[in-house]
Length: 394
Ligand code: MLT
Image (cartoon, rainbow, N blue to C red):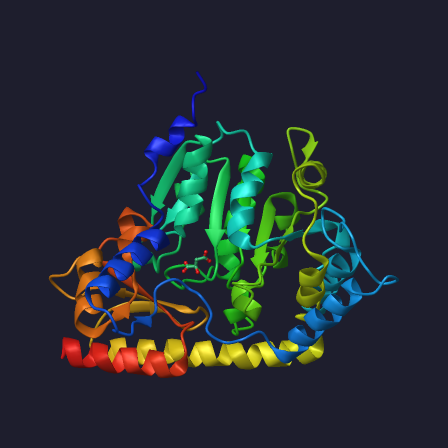
């Protein structure tokens, strides 16, 4: 008899955001007609920018034209997409070659797929609180996981001295959910450690566009030595509103080798086998994100989310609650007021003020007693939600 993958038994019954969706659906069923203010999953509220929409329309027209029509796209990415991303990094002073850029259908998908590159017996280190897909994707493959708790004393930042014998290390900066950003010196310590130990750093840069402080790194490849130990996973979801459009990219340096095997070449082998490429239309839309015109438009939208984050942070400040994030990140991470635990606080807000957030416990044990607000909602909903929170807690 065929045995299923028994590691699925080690997972929670449902994924964090599915659990939240179930609870909110149950609430709405019991209270029909209520409008919820959604600040849970980090889904964007603002539309794609005009320059991207124009590129998408033009690509649709290409598909209607016998001469310009495109069939299968190269599995690792259309040359125009790979070149555009590499040029964008060059403008930021980071040398990346087009053949080091791999198109993806989004960071969350890629964070699971990329595990194909590594021996499932090498332990993964996951600094927590963490995006729950890191843990679940590794549990599914049966890889041993070491959970590295971080807390407010160290600004929710992981230290390499605690990494032990990990083979694969997840670093997310700006961090989901805490908003903490690894500065250059801490990131350099991680890079040095990985180069010494032979580990590989999986750098999740999904929120890099929220970093405005030029002293802070947006790419791990701003750090010397990273080309020998890191993979960077990027997304256009939060940068340019592609949560429903689905497009991202992954950077794997040509120098990255372990046990005499080249990880870039391995990923080419993987993609050419497991993928038939990503839609031509989406890659045209994605490439358009990096034009000067689109960058100006995208940054206007990011400013809306940044303003939301400030509204949330200011409200928590007035309420005298401990919080982090919201400055170079679209998430605000707060300690729940006494006597509430994460899920109790979730229920309190849902039932009393119809606001949906994310319980910190969903990001790992060290998130217990914390709660995350997303700044990706509309300004109106964010203001209304914070006004209700202030009334409730006062
Ligand atoms: C989050 O809310 O943590 C993210 O939006 C989830 C995701 O990107 O998949």
